[in-house]
Length: 100
Image 1 (tube, rainbow, N blue to C red):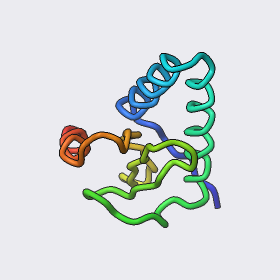
Image 2 (image 1 turned 135 degrees about the horizontal axis):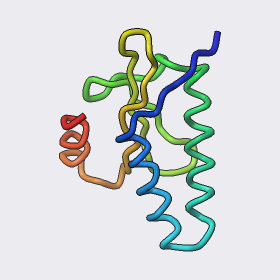
Image 3 (image 1 turned 90 degrees about the vertical axis):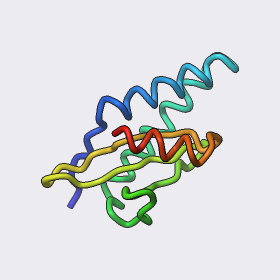
């Protein structure tokens, strides 16, 4: 059974930053990034909880971009905590997750 996955505000901001980053490189790439991440999030409806735990959260890798999606289940709600750029340092990823 599919359950909805809620993207928290911080994770939505992560996606917006990614869109801006890729649009600055070339027009239209940001939209492709957005569509790819949305497809990744839709896959979580089916595969939620089947990924490895990393830094205290489940971690799903994006299929097309060097991004990772951190998520959890909290009081029966499936939540996306962060959508982070894997080109950042591991310390930066830990710090960002620690703040959420």
